Length: 160
Image (tube, rainbow, N blue to C red; front, side):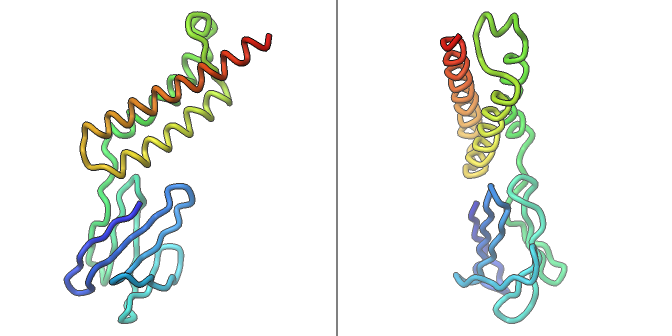
């Protein structure tokens, strides 16, 4: 996730965070700031800045105790939509009567498929600000998860 804000006293502040590793990078006027720790950075003038939070909880930059919001926190409906693939695979895939109606994998394989779709949908939802696009992304991730889980279950059943 990349974001740039304008802080009047310090210029353009850029913030980058990897959704997979959590690695954070701070840029001031296009130049990368040196790291003092995991979340502490040295600005061009030698002052220290601290970044708190992450792409889900919302990230904030603190310089001399003054807060500058970098990213807003995820909304409740983003979490709910992102959890649909995981919940579907873990519930539907582990009930034998439901699997006979529509076969999908559950357990560890279904959980892994649902977990990957959960993370991908959260990352994609955080890249847009339109609520309707977030809903479409969540539903698309759910559909992809169901199709993959069905395909894997079909392969397992055809091997028997």
